[in-house]
Image (cartoon, rainbow, N blue to C red; front, side, top):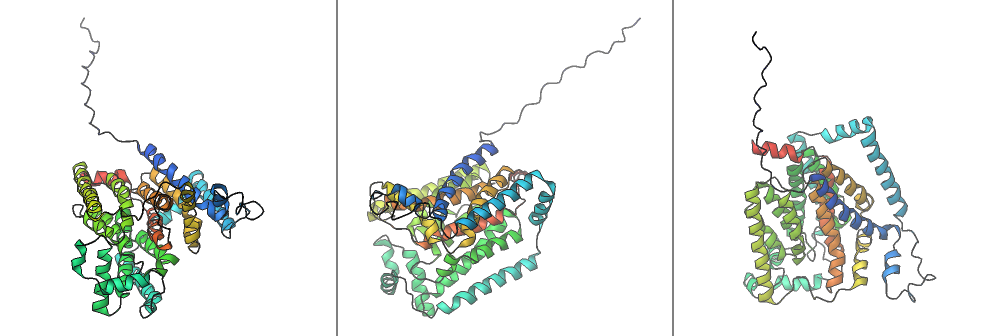
Length: 429
């Protein structure tokens, strides 16, 4: 009788595992970015809750001027109660979003909301019209900022041959000179620059989120900023530096090879943008560019670093003013700059901490560039303490325009459904 037992099927050779390049796990990277960012945000907001606390505890004059009977370190600030209340409310809503489905459904409806191209165009035009309406009256006014007395004669005597003679914000002088000789007022180009920055905010946010509505939200949030409006037409503190920097990021998304050029030009508008180089490197690393293009892009930005070193040696400058030994007191004082200089930007002060936490959760869900915005917020907040600790420079309100910009873009990112995995799959097909 034949053996009818079923013969075992031959074992199949195991399929070769796809080769994977070394990369940090997404959740670990989210935590690695979130912890220093939320810590820095928290320290910066201490001065909102207790304005005198950092000064009282870090000053070398604690036994005299900052004695307890003169300054109460735990006297709450005007925005202390609103900040705590808003943070608790947002935290409760956030917990409800993750624990209860009804909150998740409602939030998803908001996140999935989108507008047509025609509606977006109307919205962009409306925001630009509002911006021009509230700032155009300044064009005929003489500027009152203290630095204007230095900038005005410098622009009036400036010519293009001076580019090679000294390291100064020559690109800014070029724009102001064009404004003066073409329009008869140095304020016109700064107005156009600020309007262009608003418009670029829309396109940049729309590009990284894939949503026109998110772009409009970021644009509107940026416009409501008191500091942005206050400095939007100034000659002394125009926005050309941050416009050029954001344009360099936008080029990374659209056409990466020339992206270092506007960043390099921004140094000749405000040398502060040299501190933004780490943000570019992180943004490139977390972009959806192919690995080969990322390496090329890193190399092109390396050229900027070489050019900066060469320019520093040629002009005998440090780009950041006089260097001094590390000052511990000034370092901690730098963390109070945001609360002081942005005291009228209530939305940013009240929602910066909740925004950071929500960006962390968005990053954990794989939302594209949520972690990049956290890095931008971190570096912008660290510039103030590091600047005063290592240089003779002081913190001025206009330097926080970049923080306001990335806060607005971060709010738009929260409305994004564009995940990293889906984007990488679509780009590979």
